[in-house]
Image (cartoon, rainbow, N blue to C red; front, side, top):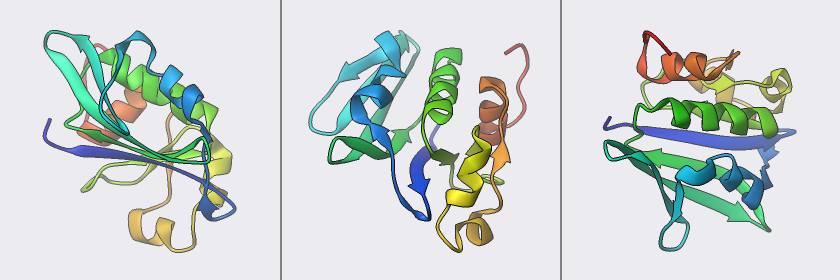
Length: 139
């Protein structure tokens, strides 16, 4: 897919996150270190993508996934990440940001919900996938 997915953390309207190691652990064995703040997520020969992590004081404040693949492992990892931290996920042109934790909605910066829409709560990995790239079958 030639889209980008953004994951940003917030608390009290300010950027926030959880430990970078914990964020990277959410991607499991698919994570392959790259140069600087870049990593590759490799699920199999046909499913891989690149992710960049923005870090402050050992905390992952945001991530950007470039050309995300459509592998169940990616959506499972993103769901795990959204469960662990104060994160919201969105894609340009998407309908609304996606969150897993209900408390994230009140943590967004002023005006973000007005600009992007109120976060949609995802119950599972398939809900995140559907919100980002549309309905799917068999996941």
